[in-house]
Length: 267
Image (cartoon, rainbow, N blue to C red; front, side, top):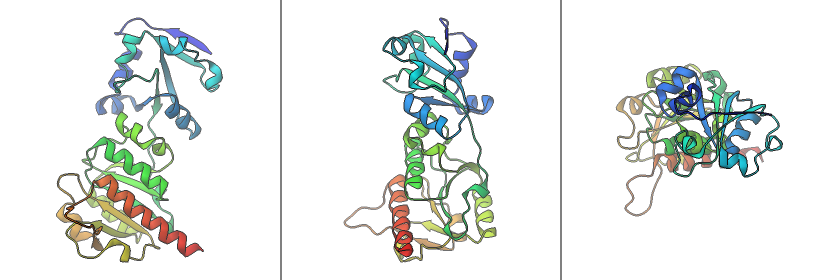
């Protein structure tokens, strides 16, 4: 394994890595930031192309070696102070890498009658979107669509929150909601909108068919357009005086019930 050393914050590689903390930088370079050894290994295992690996001097001195990841041919070492500026966490993990952004197609989310898509309409909190991606993978969804106005799926906090699920689940980003609806209807995928004020509990639906559940923005919920175009508008019944659930929690509840019903049908 080749080891390079950089001692200047103005180095072009370090500038590039720092720029990946912003959406504009990710779009410019076609790369995203992976923080920590676990995400690096997860990304490599799913075929993500790794371009750069940078470690802090203390991380290298703590015993990091090529045996930890034989697929790494070259690393760059920087002092701890320079390294802190490369990360977005309060406690730097000692190793960051850059991966090539992969762009699944809409068709990758389709699995016929087994299609189950989570649609995040203008979900803006990185932690929420990352958790939604993780839940979608855990409960057998065939894909997730984050519409235009949503946080970037390759935002570093989304990547961390998704815990590797971003590399395993088709995640479509930036589609306009009307285009999403059009494509879903063309594929005969029923569109189900989640709305706290609706009367019908979502579990009364036949969940053993091609479905797309639309979850609204954290503050404003669903747009009126989605409620009008959806095949059904349903709710998650709640006890007590709770008005609504966090969007990530809502998606996990709904997708778990889909997994439960579909599993029961196979027995």
